[in-house]
View 1 (cartoon, one colour):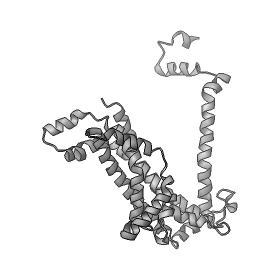
View 2 (tube, helix red, strand yellow):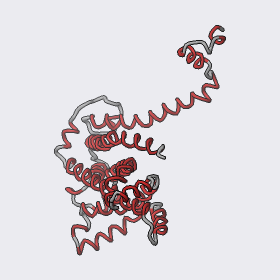
View 3 (cartoon, one colour):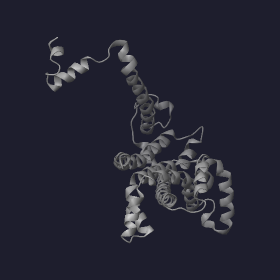
View 4 (cartoon, one colour):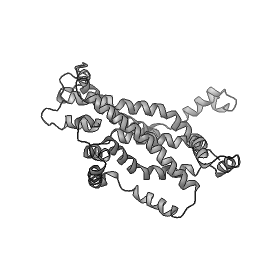
Length: 305
């Protein structure tokens, strides 16, 4: 009674306690707040349990999924040690090189195309933008047969761009991601005021200088987002890599691990789980590295005048 009567005069901690005590209770608390905690707990369980199961299977020396039903009943590093005796690290390097090259190429090509659409006015510009919007609606895997036939034909003339070529696979990834990323970057490029370009032109800067030294720095958040999404998508891509690459020493990590798991009777699940755990490391590290650029850049860009 005393706190209610002197609410305005009470210290800040007491006023907070008064508001907290006045919150919903009972059935009203469940309808307004409690169900959110329940949904959060369910989502955490859905995300964490499979991860714990894979880690447990990777540490289980028996190498079977049935032997891993009891989480962490047996712990050993045999599966991780056996990875060094297989082609795993060759596949890992292949995937890392392909994903990194594709991410860099996607950022540069998409950024250049988005800059052109955003800053220049030329005939066919609107039709090209509409085409990009339509193309991105179709998944790249729909063109797997066409891509294979094209690479088969090109390989007769230029073998380095034919099937079973890492360079050809990178080219396919770059071509498939160009439309989506260009349209994504185009919207962000439009948020950069044109007055910045005009001021740079007055100082004598050319289009290349404006693009490389000014625009790319101002749109760094979307570059980080596109680069991250491109790396994650390419690092785990399977269908196109399986179609283009055939030699065991050129396979990507996803295709190589599939070969292990495709043996229904003698699949080395422990080895597969250990490889899957290590395959997640580059993606997690890259996400943690770019997180500050993504979050900080997007929040600063959202209030840009």
